[in-house]
Length: 140
Length: 184
Ligand SMILES: [Zn+2]
Image 1: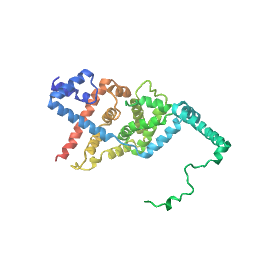
Image 2: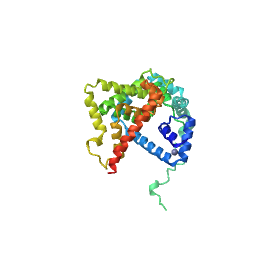
Image 3: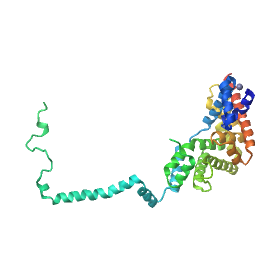
Image 4: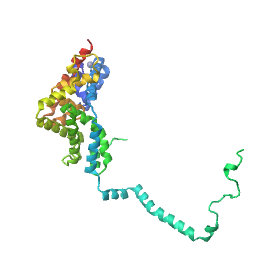
């Protein structure tokens, strides 16, 4: 590829519109020819500048309005959300745990009340009622 | 991790996954809003068109993610909405005047060495004929291929290629002319 051919392909190259083989030829030429490489850098800089200058964020209120509309249009119904929750493996365990745990706790407490030995045993092990409160003990 | 394609996000959103919208929005907000602003100028009009375009493409099932890329569809809808807005605007001329005044900060003032690079680029873009500006914006902001722009405008791909070359050269000429003032 000579400089003239390279120059004719430069815009398509910058826009990423060349087929693989011509693209490789331009890349090779740019690696070998300083004049064309500089021309390409200038073109790239102009196009990047155009792109940067054209970008613009909408005001935050526009995003909020749009998000609310999207939510209204696409939010699944309550039964679909419930179904999705149950279908997922981890939340399914969470649901199971939420159902089973209170029942298990209740059973443990109920069996504790029925056990006469547990009624006489001290509620806090290792507690010495004769020892002075911590605040009156010498620190050293 | 490979990026989830736009089309999959559309499918996910339509299936009720609202987080998919947030990802799509982050990809397109600055590009789409920038495009609309550069075509219609007035920000209040642009706000409405931006919102309508996004909603229409997502809600309207005439866009099928299995059959084509999201970006060309989004920008095609935006382009049509802009054209309709321009047509329906009774004071079309005054709208354009206001738009150009907003987007061409350098024009009223004499060439100024203090003019920033971004303003210089915006002035060059605003000075382009609208058809050329459209092409550059669709290529740059929309990231559309020659073929996709050709499909959107209903002309041959070769025509788009030569028009886009001409538009790019015109833009660079305007940029250089503006830039020469900086060197005075
Ligand atoms: Zn060369």
